Image 1 (cartoon, rainbow, N blue to C red):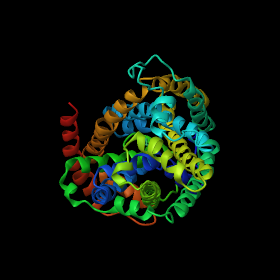
Image 2 (image 1 turned 90 degrees about the horizontal axis):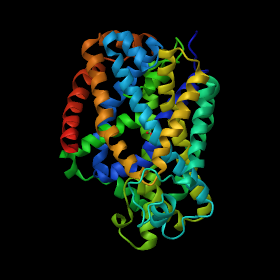
Image 3 (image 1 turned 30 degrees about the vertical axis):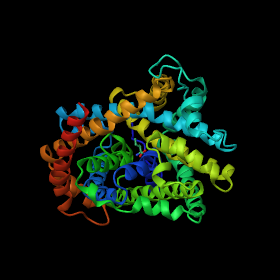
Length: 452
Ligand code: ILE
């Protein structure tokens, strides 16, 4: 059977950007940058983007385009012995799909709450207590106690992914992204346009961007930057490779890769400006220091921001705009994560798309219900930690080692250059074979040491 194809170049770019721009940009990037030295984070971040992100994106686009299959079959085409790495990557994607969708379900609920600021004055008690059911009296490790209020939004989030992956590349994934991506950018620009003129907003933004060079020698900051780059660019865990496998014969790989990376990283900076602008305004309104209003991780989007939204002008508009943006960003990414698994299974089992999508999304829904129990948050944190700090970095390192050292890398460069408008030089191979591998070895080793 002939492989499906994207309907247009714009369609592919929007889908690739839709995959890259996700919860990682709005929910994760700002607190990562904050926790790792604010402005100082940008140096490792930009370094990782240029020497690992862009080369990796070109590599995945090339492999997908050349072999026209998902990760396991592509790696098998390179060498029979490499197929397992493709399945390892598919497994990472599947695990991410199971918990990522839960954060989308939170965003769906909060988009609804935001119309009336249903979280009230104490957003911390609301989120952890009322919403997640983690009251003082409940045992947080109880995985049997389903939070029924989360089941409906969870089903909605899976339904969106199911719709797109069931209908396929052109009629599903591309169509959804063509609607969601422009909307997302407009929404975020509207929010920024309003927020930056509020008193105190610029302080918040300055504070995020103000460099703290003392942190640049900290390996943890580099680890965070590399982890963030691979996660946010959806490379190293089967996603971009799968999307590229639907590219038509004539496609500008190098250009597409640069555009995807730059648009994604630009969006991250916009999201940082939006969130820290709002926090700066909140600190100003409450007459507090910025460090006293920021909480990290999950708390930033679902605890701190609701409080900030309470204080914004027209909270009934700004709140839904923010959570709808988070939801759209999450859904377009979740579709790509599920597609990486779907395409891998279709290649291997020869199943039809509808059957594969139905099986994966049903299993996914059931498994992800684990994360909407009382112990779900704890489990989510734990799984997210191992996936990002160890499995994902390990998978990236293995891919670079196998493809960079055991295959003819110059053939891939020649392939990309033969169909691209501008060509890439030898720097590309140097980044893959030496710089990225060396950085990943040091970071991964350190992460494993810290974890155990
Ligand atoms: N790149 C997206 C993000 O930053 C997803 C990561 C696909 C799993 O959220």
